[in-house]
Length: 200
Image (spheres, helix red, strand yellow):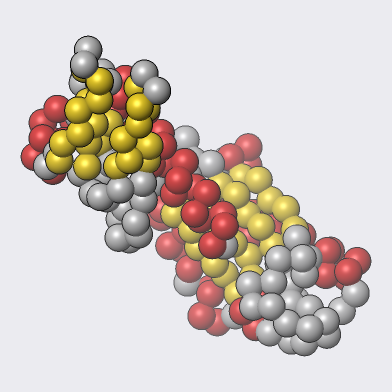
């Protein structure tokens, strides 16, 4: 899920920066802090020169004399870019559900997470949901491919039952190709028996 989640976070940040450039203050880029505190950076270029923004609220403005770097503030972002920020979609959120060995049944701890996922999806006017099923390394490739897909399809069906439009959910299975916890073949690992859900 790390890859899936980081790609979504990077996309969300990029979309926001492009919007800031195109709206209230054309030619201005402000690097906003990530919700989870992870470091991010962006390179701003003009006329062959570049400025690296790698701190929260680091900013660059295009001028006739080149890029001008400065430090913005939460207050400036709120006042100048409120329209752009309020029109942005919510950030992507990732969830992981775990399954009983060899089955497409949730573990006890994962049963309640479906409600949380449904609530998150309900907050988005046009949700985009990606569901990816996985298995551990026990069993043959064909068996695990089928089981991973069954798990993903089961989660998709459950979300549809809770009101999510079928067209808004993509489901796929990866079998034992993307083990969260690397193991030798034939090793049972509960954390690998999972479905990853990305809600955008």
